[in-house]
Image 1 (cartoon, rainbow, N blue to C red):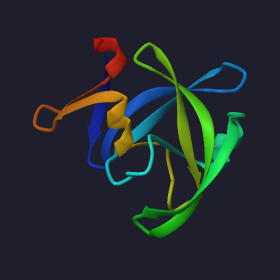
Image 2 (cartoon, one colour):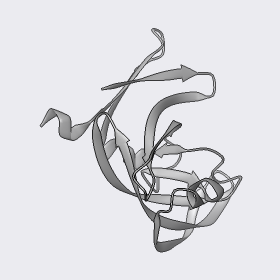
Image 3 (cartoon, rainbow, N blue to C red):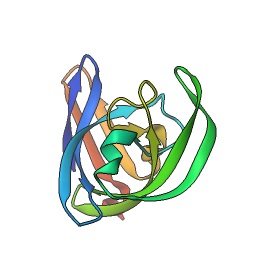
Image 4 (cartoon, rainbow, N blue to C red):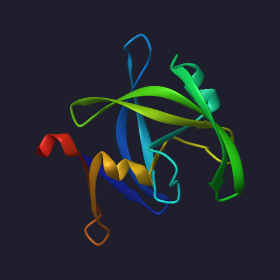
Length: 129
């Protein structure tokens, strides 16, 4: 289980992005329930350095700014002592301006938070099985 940070801007969890060379890059990922189309979203400029493999294009994805097209890369993350391969939505500003964990991340992770106590946790579902 990993602890998150609750701020006025949202809930953040530190996860590691795994480059194609196996290097771990720690990032603060914003849990964004408004991003309903995917598990992970990253700005195009940031994903270039990771060396991830392009797998598809998703057109007409709803965003807060209307519909947008996204490239989908095959990425790897290290979360809660687990290496996980995930499809990554790669976009431009303003659709993606930071690393985000989308609503579909709830299929992989248990996420709990208590705003009053300023506590947030994320746990890989596989860890409980």
